Image (cartoon, rainbow, N blue to C red):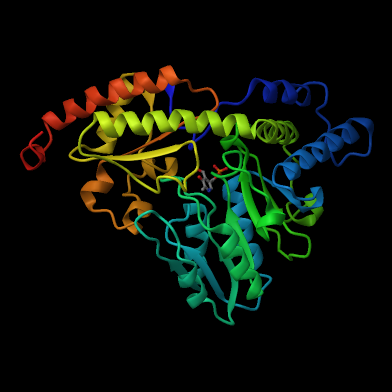
Length: 385
Ligand SMILES: Cc1ncc(COP(=O)(O)O)c(C=O)c1O
C-alpha cells in the first residue's frame, strides 16, 4: 500500500501513540477534578498546550484547545462576529468549507461577506484586500496554504494590512503548520487554526491561537473549561498526543521539509517529463513542500483515483470533504480552470513515511493508468492520444 493523501490525514506517529496510552489506562482522571487523578490529567493538558504554543511561537495562554480545524475556524467566524459591531467579513474564494460555510450562514443573517478572487496560481492580491476594507469590517480570514493546490498566501503582508486598519486577522494554517515554519509573532497574526491529524497526531483535536488581547465569544457553553471559551470535558489522551505531534513537528521541521521537497521534486519532474499533456497546478515555488497537484488532460480524476486504488495507491482529487459529495473544486474554478482541467485533476501529497521508491512506483503506475484511461477517453481524437 502506498499512501499519498497526507493532506487529508496522516498516520499517527508511534511516539505519539506511546505518549497517549497512559491517558486511556491509569491516568483517566477528569482534569477538572481536585484529586490526584484530576491533577495529573490537568498537568498533562498544560504540558501539551505548551508544546502546541512552542510550535508556532505563541504563549501557552494563547492556545484554545478544540476538536480540530473545523471547530477552530467556526469559533473564529462566530466568536469574532458576535463580539463586534461591524458586520463585514473579508475572506477568499478558495477557503476550506469550514470557513466558507459559516461565512455563508452569516451572510444569510445580514452580514456582508467579501470573497476575494485569486489569480491562476491561487494567490490573493493584497491590493484587492485593501479595496474591500470598510469601517464595518470586523474580520479578515485568509488561509495560510491551500489544501488542494498548496499555494502559500502572502500572509505577512495581509497581516500588516489588517493591523494597519485595526481589523483582526485570522489564518487557517491547518495545511501549513509542520510543513513550513510558522511564527505568529513574526507574522503579526491575531488568530490561527491548527489540526492535529495533519501533523501525525490523532484525529478530532486541534487548536486555535488567540493573541492575548483579542476578544472572542465561545461556541459551546457549559462547565467553563478552557477559560470559559470551550466547555466540555477535555479529550485528554488526544490533547497529549497532539502535544507530542507538535513537539516532533518542531524538532524535525528541517528534516521533514527537506524530505518532502526531495520527494515532490522527483514526483513533479518525472510526471511532467514522462506523461504528456500534463500540468502542475498552483505555483512552482510558493507552495507547501509536501503538495503536488496535476491536471492530466483527457482523463477524469475520479477514474484515476479508482485505478490508482486498484494498484494499492491512495490519492485524491482535492479536498477529502468535497470528494464524498462529488462537487467540482471551487478552488480550481476560482483559479480560472476550464471544466476539463478541473475534471482531470489529481492531488498527491507526501508525508514523513513516504520513500523515493514509493514515488517511483507511483509514477510507473500513473503512466500506465493515464494511458489506459486516455485510450478510451471521449477526448481521444481531440488530443490524438
Ligand atoms: C485548510 C483546512 N482547513 C480546515 C480543515 C478541517 O480540519 P479538521 O479535519 O481538523 O476539522 C482542513 C481539513 O482538511 C483543511 O485542509
